[in-house]
Image 1: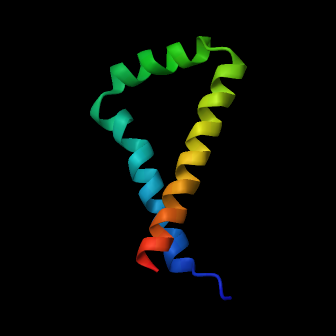
Image 2 (image 1 turned 30 degrees about the vertical axis):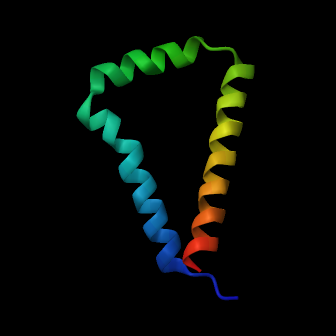
Amino acid sequence: MKFQWDIFLAALGLAMIIEGLPYFMAPHATKRTLGRIGEMPGKVLRGIGLVSIAGGLAFVAVSRLLLG
């Protein structure tokens, strides 16, 4: 199986676009939100991260099953 650089780079670019949107569209709200995140305990952040990873993996798996 050959590594598909085009798909990898497209996914990386899309992730960068999505990550950059809050900073561009609402910088003040983003600062407030990041301040609140900084106050959360590490255990809560790990839980949020785990749910995000699981959701992303599920999304990729379902899309690969449905779209081939």
